[in-house]
View 1 (cartoon, rainbow, N blue to C red):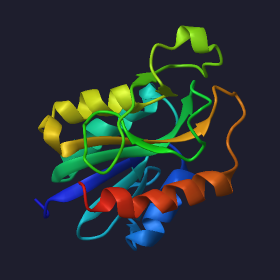
View 2: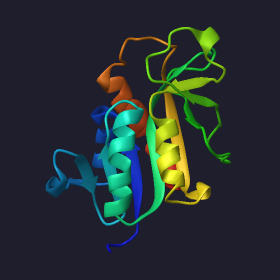
View 3: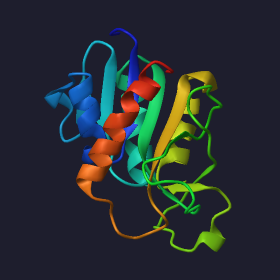
View 4: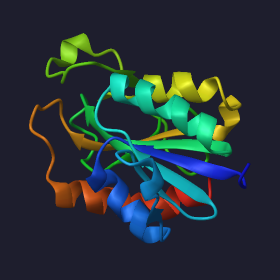
Length: 176
């Protein structure tokens, strides 16, 4: 098997693009139509939005590649309007340098804050965590979320997503 790699999982290409550029990842076309990018240290997969896509693609990634750590990074809705858009959180671990927030994963966009018992909401993190927990120790799994909206159905601007993710890379690169 190949060398151990850190898996980076995103739902959307605008989330992946700054990471691909930062780590100089090259698309591995042998697994198309999957969007897989890699170098010696990292493998990034763009799964698409939702639990189902994550559940379909991630087991294949773990079976095919030698993964030692896993990172899910992406945007999330937030019910607390006091938290600035672009704020960066880790949701599954307490880290010294990155604030922690609670997260709920849903199947459809959630606009009613009364239906949310956590600060953040996304559409794939719990599936990412479930699949990753079958393959790695919990200490090697990281879920990072960036506040993109306040429970809105409107998809955030691609440049906002790109720039928000780009700003976070130095914050989590040394933590994982």
